[in-house]
Length: 256
Ligand SMILES: NC(=O)c1ccc[n+]([C@@H]2O[C@H](COP(=O)([O-])OP(=O)(O)OC[C@H]3O[C@@H](n4cnc5c(N)ncnc54)[C@H](O)[C@@H]3O)[C@@H](O)[C@H]2O)c1
Image (cartoon, rainbow, N blue to C red):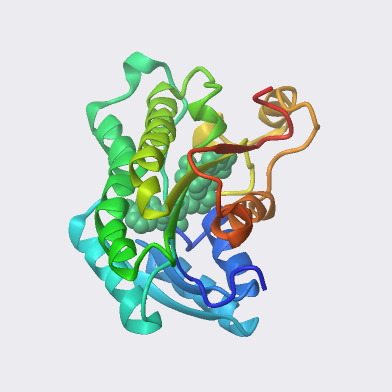
């Protein structure tokens, strides 16, 4: 039980990678606040965790809002008596297209869901971590992307948003370290099995598009939610007690 009794918020846990992280964390003894803006997905993840004997609650919230984070951190405190870790997984991309065709609305949405959410998470979590004391500390794990360090064409605004997450995480790591609060990123490579995959690929993930992505991954397969969850598990656990400001690429060598 590598996360026994740790209280963790996982955002965007109603589908895809986030559902995998929330479920894996619960298997390792975490008490999980499952978040999503979409209640159907969030309730499904909650049910799966409870079926497996795990401890969790679902809190619907929009992570781009201050009120959403008040509700999320409040749920952790009310149901589980504190907070140890936030996994910022909720994310979104504009459809793969030339840079000049990305609308202002899509630019704003991308930065709001991918970047502003991380800002709000720290605004709300840090005071709680500080109040709980240095002996307990705290941890923030941000799901950025290989896009933030090794960008592909057609996703420039998304890439930039993830680059911002990477840099903000390193900067927060430096600033929060004296409080024993760690901030790290996990950077997955393409996963064709989530709702966002067709937007990344610029259309249905058919054989031609799969082959194009596959050719860029030296280990010859795509990432899975389990791959990402396992890296997050390490960073959230006490095994990573002295690890802060790093990116773990979960990418089969894509970024080498
Ligand atoms: N799938 C990939 O190839 C890939 C690769 C690298 C990084 N990522 C990142 O992984 C993360 C998860 O993506 P995914 O591929 O599992 O996609 P997904 O669409 O399955 O999951 C994203 C979840 O976030 C939720 N969400 C969106 N906006 C929200 C908001 N404002 N408040 C709360 N929840 C919100 C959605 O409802 C959804 O359940 C994202 O940050 C994404 O950028 C994905």
